[in-house]
Image (cartoon, rainbow, N blue to C red; front, side, top):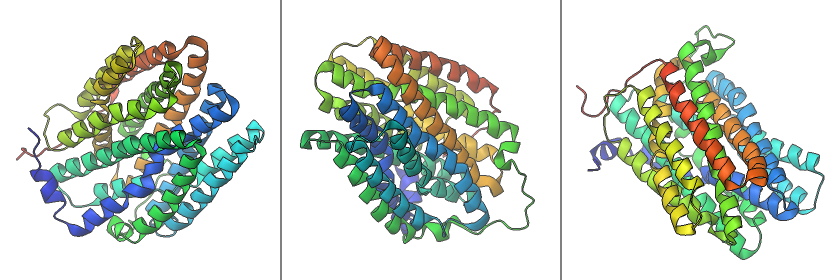
Length: 401
């Protein structure tokens, strides 16, 4: 049964409730932009390859800026960058919509997508570092990171649904424009929620290595693991709009994302309330193998109902995986590099997603949906095996002494 007591304890803190709720709106673009840009470019060019390239450029830019912003925040706090980046990101998305709809040359569209990614505000990394630096017990941190994974899954549920609604309205351009507004308004509200003050003080007087958290062997292994899983997830996710298009009902893509994300959020929430004695790397390995099997099941489906069911079964592992990866990185990263460590995680995760979208677009045009999903299954299997190379750390759960 689902144990809600840890969450009641966690959210007895009213300011923390306000911080978490205010972080949802500016993070909805995580679930909207990659799909919205893919569908927008594909609708204008009739090419999944070009669409995958634009989405990859956007996500790779997110990856490039994240550790730079993370290091700045660790040394100066997030106060000076949060609002300016939120406004710049909104403006950049609107310029990108204009470039795509006006049939601008591909290099210009790629440059606009890259710029939009470069100026994304560090909402998620700030919150994760806030949890890592806090005095919470391990049990509370597990619940907090589980809430994080549920919020991200909620964004991936609502984001594609919003995009699919814009398809009914006539153009995915509306989704990208709406994302711009959400980023600007949401970042302003988040900045006033108390999150920046709760992040804490900059740790002064600590000798900082030029590699930051990457000096740690365990952190490097954990980040490579996230990178491999991210490529597999990107391969998996770009198959959803391709299957919807092949079925003759492009607007159903929102159904597929919801079918995958709702079970993920539920299982992530349940995972955060329970203690598992296995080391975190073995828990992650189990979820990776589940995702591999799920991707293979999706590959052999030809009907909408069976594909929906396979998406739901696959999604059961996403929430626990994201939570366990965050807990593992938090255990392995030195405190003075908290924000930067999580930004490196986001960096490699977004690069991996971008590579997955780019490679998946090419595989779809050459081998169809089957090709990209089988590639996802193979990569998930390899990543699961690589979990054994990450140092073993355990989380002191809710029923630990």
